[in-house]
Image (cartoon, one colour):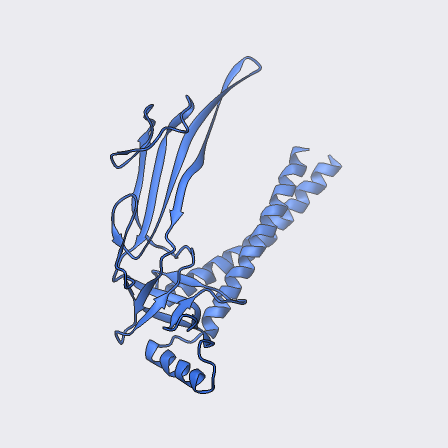
Length: 259
């Protein structure tokens, strides 16, 4: 029975791996098929669209590169580290231990749960290599390889967890709490970004964001070539691992049935 369960787990892993392999391939193809355009050229294309009576209806899937720039309202300040940024995300997890007694023996189960998390939704801008700005609508998307500015663990405080000296209410207190893990990521102003998405003029100025229909939206602190190389490596590894996992799953299930 145990061998059959292992086989089923391997089959599920192969199916999940197949999904990610196809996604990596599709993302790579989208990057290869998209042009990297300066904002000035996008403005010319938008003007041509306006000239034929399609004001506000311009759509163009492409890539843009440049430096992150604050929105007109100014920079953001991240919640945990108070870092000046244009985007941030934080996660707070509770680590716990649960004691169970079975067959006269003491068993300790360890785990964690997310008690707080937030991703900034505010837009920002990108200044291309010709110093022309274009808006960026992150739409809650997690960027690839943002800078991690917080990675710390604080032991459990019976009075409640603290966030860099700020006392939080102790609504989750129980004897199993070991402590709290804090992580935060940011994109600072001036950070060079590669963005694949859809440029539109729905609100007037040009903005790049998630495509309305099918398509991919990638915001990365890595270069286009680095992202492509990573996707190729991921695809190759999965292309090798999926058949191996599927074959092992079949062998385990057959052995489980026969034995």
